[in-house]
Length: 265
Ligand SMILES: Nc1ncnc2c1ncn2[C@@H]1O[C@H](COP(=O)(O)OP(=O)(O)OP(=O)(O)O)[C@@H](O)[C@H]1O
Image 1: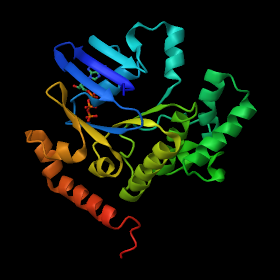
Image 2 (image 1 turned 120 degrees about the vertical axis):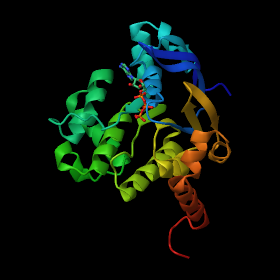
Image 3 (image 1 turned 120 degrees about the horizontal axis):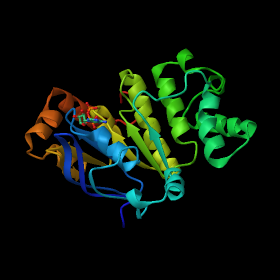
């Protein structure tokens, strides 16, 4: 099956800083792909290149078979409606309540009148597990986990086929992070989403990802199942997956598989 996203020979350079050089990556339909790598290896730049917020120095990026870098502005805007992005920090407008925040893309991109857009926004907020009472609250009145859910609702506003997430569980407590991981898997299964997930969170990788891509040495050194990636002899991979946190996350995932309902039996 043709990958939904194909990145080929990507190069990104900022002055003397070569972040990507000959980077290749595929994203397959309906998978959750985790993207990991040391700090500064270019995970966010890769995400920004794919969603069109950063113009690469060189390379090809195909999304749904279309070459992102050669599309006209109207074609590109149409394509952009087929993916949703959740940035680090959520990036909600603090002066708008949640339903107004989620209604914005519905009014701007598909021209829904405000009342209709806010009604649909409330459905999207409910989809991410927020109570109806949250719709009229402002971001400052909510916990970090609720803000993440609201940001996810906004990313889902236009019924995207691909969801891009940059560190979605950063700043959440472990229980909030685990609930968010669960929500992500549920939404992927229910909506058939394809997910590109940049994360440092090993628990999230084990709980959600079908495949993991590792950025190192300016490219993707491996993109495969967690088991195969964790067994790769690369020193950074070994430090990351076989260090104390990696082993704890792997053990927790094994326990979850053995006892999926966590009822202690
Ligand atoms: N607009 C920019 N101008 C100059 N350099 C940039 C720009 N954006 C990113 N960089 C550089 O590109 C490199 C990769 O940055 P990026 O934010 O993608 O890393 P990352 O892997 O996401 O890191 P982290 O895990 O710490 O978030 C860094 O060295 C960063 O300083």
